[in-house]
Length: 112
Image (cartoon, rainbow, N blue to C red; front, side):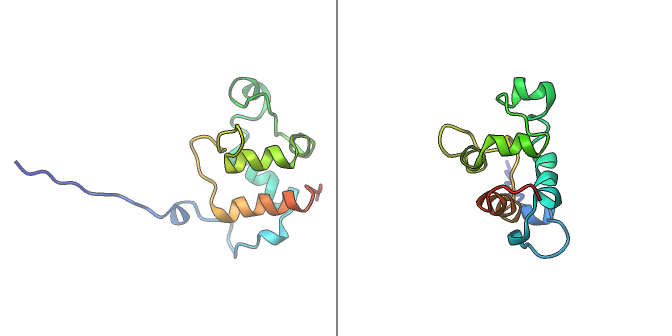
């Protein structure tokens, strides 16, 4: 009897490349980066009727929705701290994308 085992390990960054160019999270804006990230990672669960069934009641469809969540709850969800599970469920946000959101939050969550 012959038994073969192997591992398959792709690099996440190669499978999910960032927006072309360098990772410069210091220039993050809501309209330029954060809204796009939220649309890509969050709206499957946090929009419309889906928010009540799979998004904990939190809607993130526009700037005011995200701003009303507040910086502490948003960071807790992204890092999986407090009583929250890390978001997004079943996915992974790379460090550059996470840094973009966190920098925007730390800048006061401006509507820019």
